[in-house]
Length: 208
Image 1 (cartoon, rainbow, N blue to C red):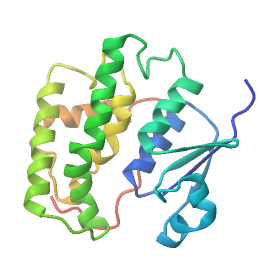
Image 2 (cartoon, rainbow, N blue to C red):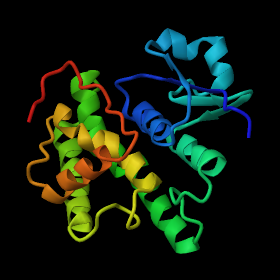
Image 3 (cartoon, rainbow, N blue to C red):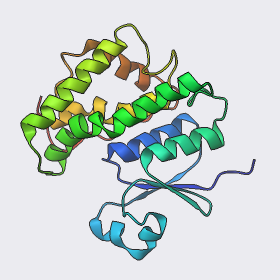
Image 4 (cartoon, rainbow, N blue to C red):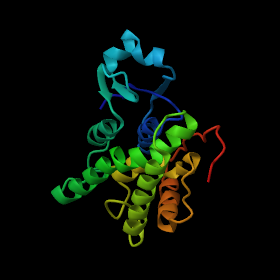
């Protein structure tokens, strides 16, 4: 296989971007990171050719563009880590990972991620409803992880990579992780993986 020509277009403070960059680092793949920080950059014709929706992150692999953070994870696992266990080959294992990819795009996004978005980027939403969603999904994760080391298998998979960034940074949105010891232990396990890189802390003081 030839040397990959990978470029990740994203925002360093974005958990969606971080999950893609984290996986690139865990796989030990060389890549370039292009910061796409402004609405003007995301609506520019050049970027719209990569993702017509104007959303980050986008990964390019040579002439191929892959938008969407979870799609990037699946692509990298299949293209550069086949057989590595990040996306199990057996139907049940694959379904378990897919379940958590859906949770990352659902309850994690509308709970811990949105709470952080409100504080860090000034998004508007019903704070009480967002924090209720965060408490519900974190409580569920804590119970799920009470007797497990990782979310979908006995080893780290795409499920853990997809959920880590916004859960670990939930306190930046005023969502305390103190009530969830199993979640905090899981975060520590993800952060101990060889090749782990952190997402930069928000410049906004933690609210919890």
